Image: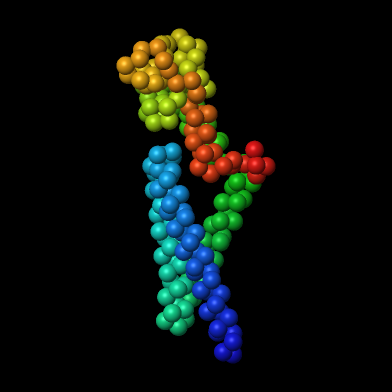
Length: 184
């Protein structure tokens, strides 16, 4: 019987340490990507890392204090987190990825830009891009290129070349790599 308890403690210890390392890397990733993603997404990732780290502490404390209650709490929380990860994987397999979200968000803002000029100013300034696909998008809707597309306030006719969809996807690729399951 004693070897079973020892084995359980070893398993909980290893899982707790792994979760702690995972949580810290998630916190670092969220901190690194705060300028690339909307702040809400970065905060969600940051707090998810903190929660994961807290759960790993339950496991470590349970083993150190020989507390069945803490180890049980850790086990239940770990099962919930595994279920959440399986849901995330299922969503990715169904094609629900960052690129799709970015494209939908920019297309929605572009529709707003057509009716209310200035709707694209924030992403164009933040991501150093111009238009939905390119700066000529403005000319297609018969409007001058937005001032938020300028590379510099001092230089009048020099604009960002990349469209906002491409710029956001490039930033995402630089942080995480490709998002689809084929590695493209």
